[in-house]
Length: 178
Image (cartoon, rainbow, N blue to C red; front, side, top):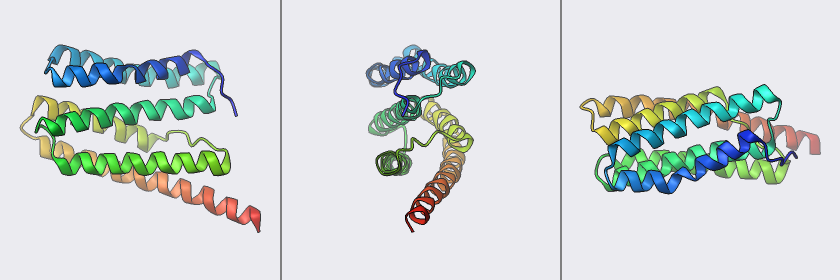
């Protein structure tokens, strides 16, 4: 496995460092900081993957750090927004359960099959729509329920795609043992 520290991996790790800042900004209702940190997280997420691919430095560590940072940032924001009454409990519950299932599946794939499952386009789209929903919840837009419904649809599709990929990996490993 490739565990090299590359510039893109450092960017992903730095994104994890935004967690306490995001929690503080949300709790303090510091709108300027919420927007700045959210945009920084979004742009760094786009940039780190592009940089890794362009430089030919896609690593197993990056495949783990990048989605972990995304999941922890989204989960932190969802929990804080729910505690503030800005986001429904059901949405945060679905989001956290989905992220837990994906993290657990990824951990099993890594431990059992020595494979770090990279993010796929449906997952990236779901993350982008979820981030949009979280911003909408923060700003309490009047059509929040529609945005949450769309986000839920993207989350569902991404989860099905992930489950299908994981199932294929499992079946292939079972067939190779026979």
